[in-house]
Image (cartoon, rainbow, N blue to C red; front, side, top):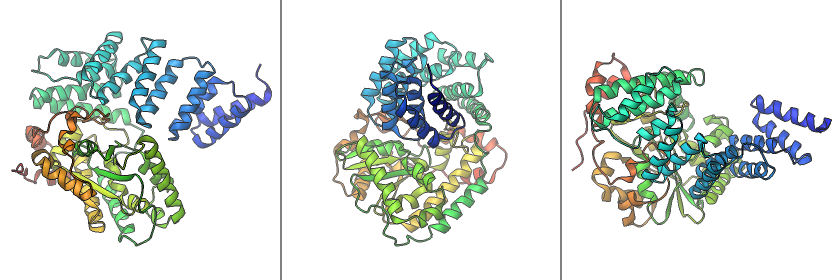
Length: 499
C-alpha cells in the first residue's frame, strides 16, 4: 500500500513532469526514489526527463533501474536505451543489441523495427535495413514511416515504378496526419527526381513542404527573413572584434574541429572524408554548442560578458562529453551546420578552434534543402523563398566571422571537393596541422555510422551528379512569383565545374 508520504512525493513529481518543469521534476523524482526506490515507473519517468535534459549517462542508468525493478512494457525502455547509445554515446553495436532485446520481448513492436532499420542505414547496411523495413511494412501497411524509409532505399526507373504507386495510394487514402503525409510526399519527390520526372518531383516537394508546415503549426513561429538578417546584425555588432579576452580552453584535448554552414552544402561529405583520417573521429551532429548557447541565455551579449570560469566550465563539459564518446581520439569533428550562428561562442570556449565552412552553389543547396524533411525548429525550410533568405543570412554571418577570424576559418566548396579531392583533402589537413592520409580519399569504405540525410551519398565514390542539379528545376523556379531573396540567387550564374 502506498503511504501518505510516498503519495505526496509522487504527486509532486508527476505534476512537475506534466507541466514541463524538467529540472524540478528531476529533483522531485530523485527525492521520491531516494526514499522509495522500488518504483519502476518512476525510474522510467526519471530516465525520460534526464534524457530530455541531455543527461544521457544518468538517463541510461535510470532506465536500467526501471528494467531491474520489473517495469511493464520493457521493450519501450530498451528502445529508449538504444536511442541513447546510438545518438549520445556513439555505441551503435550496443544500440543494436538493445533493439534486438526489445524485439525479443515484442517481435511486432513497430518503433523498434523502424529504429533498427534506421540503425542499419546509419551503418551502411542496406540489405539489412531493407529486410527490417519490409517486415515493418508487412506488419503495418498503412504506416507512413515504414513505407517512406523503404522507399528511400531505392530509386525508380520510371514513373510506373511500383513503389511510386504504393506511395501515391497511401497519400491518396485520406487517413494520414500532416507529418505522415509529408514523409510520403518527400519520399515520392525523391523517387520522381531519381527517374528524371522533375516536374512531378517539384509538385511532390511543394506538397510535402506544405504538409510539413501544417504539421509544425503552433510549434514554431513563421520564418521572417528580415528578422533573421537583424539577428546577423545583432550578433555581428556584439562580436565586432576578437576582443582579446583569454577565455575558455586554449589547448583542448581532444581538439574539436567545427564543420558548419548551410544544410546540404557538403558538410557530411567533408566530415566523412576527415573522419577517415587515422587521427580524427567523426563526431556527427553534436548538440552541445546550441545547449551551451541556451545556457547562456541565447544572448550574444551574455556570451561576451560571461565570466571566464563559467566559459572554462562549459568548455571542459564539452570536452568531457567527446572524450567519453570517442576515447583516445586526438581530433573530433563537430558537424552541426547551424553552428554558424555560434562561431563567437565557439571561439570563446576554444580560442584556437579551427572551423571549416562548407559552401555550395546556392541554388543547388536551395533545391537540396527543399527536398528534405527538416526538423520543425528549422522553420525556413518550407518554402523556396524562405530558404533563399536564410542562405543570404548564413552568407552574411559567415562573411563577418571570416573577417574576424581569418586564420581559423577555412572555406571548402563542395564542387572543389568533388572535382579536386586530393587537393582539397590536402588543404583541409594542412589547415588542421595534420599529415596527409590516403584513407581520406577512400572515405566511402569507412564503417562508422552516418546520421544525416546524406547517409547513402557519402558511401559512394565521389561523383559530380549533384553539381548543377538545380538546372532540372530552373523552369519551376523561374515560374514562381518574384521574390527578392530568390531572385538574387537566380541572378547568379552556375559556376563552371572545376577542371
